[in-house]
Image 1 (tube, rainbow, N blue to C red):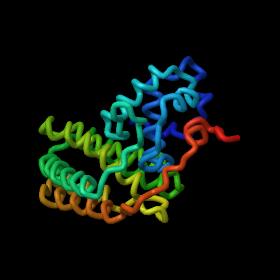
Image 2 (spheres, rainbow, N blue to C red):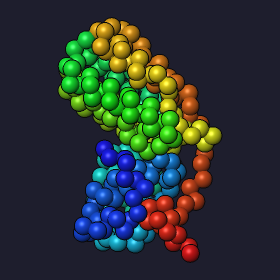
Image 3 (tube, rainbow, N blue to C red):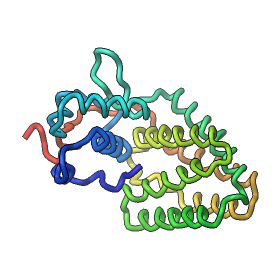
Length: 243
């Protein structure tokens, strides 16, 4: 998942040809993860077609993929909307991720090869450096990459697939419901500590570290209603549709 280009002007997306459904998926996903599209924001096909300069069929493909990733809700004969998970669903998502990722970390403790550990360390360092320079998009990219690497190298492939799905689900929930006063959900030292336990082979410490990390993230959420009055052209296209 590439989040780093989320601020790229739409004109840049068209330099090498037409905008694809994948471009739209990544652009909207990034806008949600960066809290620029709040819960329940309507995503009309016609408007998105105008924003991205594509046909409605391309927009439909993108919306179908976003629905499969749980980024949006798409129902027959209704305009697609950015997902607005309920409090119960949010709690259940975090609970499921604690179980799955905690088990994966415990199984991986002392068993990850040097190449994977080095990659994890690079992302931990990159996350901290991005936070220090207040580059939130890059910080998020490094943070997600850490968890995706754990999923990719899970000894149980089924658990790894489940974790990949849960990482995106919880990331979206965090983006949608993070307390507005928080500039970042960075938890200093959490990922570094997890790597220490993975390297030392302490399975239960790795499991506890994952649980603590997710508990702390969940505590940062504000599940109060958010306004969904947004200007899609301004957010996704770089200019105001109302101008």
